[in-house]
Length: 287
Image (cartoon, rainbow, N blue to C red; front, side):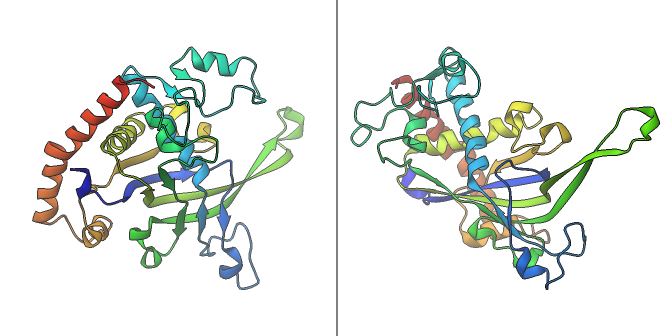
């Protein structure tokens, strides 16, 4: 059944506000006409959301699924790394992880656990899933969803940290700037270097987990989570859809076709259960 799934799949992502610690790269020099002002609401600025925070968010959801299936996940960090918290590596190992790369004797010959297989780790061995950045644009007609793009509105937000003393009358002590994207609606493009049924099963289960836990602090995307950023509605777009049907998903003036409904039933009743079963079998085999 896996041969019916294209190597490119798409995750629908919708969020009211996104702030990422890796920063947002903008194309403001194209939009500003030489008069760019950070806080000008008329600026039509697009840009790129890096794949780094997206990848960490996805991996976190996938690791939780592996734990739910009574497996251990490959730790993303080296045992000898300079972690910012003491004993963090050891505590993670006690909480459902195994040492990075401990699941394979030769990463070039042995795939290791499903997390290591997907994300890679060391020895010059890449993971089997390639995560692309998300291009966003405030002009909906300029967004190409078949390339994993999104509609989104960039702003640089300013926050004043004020004095708490009554005699200071809330006088600002300092100013903090935050790059943010609001009203993000689009998709994330993932490409598999090699297709395996358990990969799609883990992706579907991981995305569903993240959607179900989107208000949990640990499973939100990016930074500034205390301020309502990073609460993401997400789901895996039916991998059986063709390019025309994918475009229709994001066309607010059109609904699904009868063929799309048939593919939805196929995905729910046949394909997804088979892929999740393959995932369970892979995890049961152990690292």
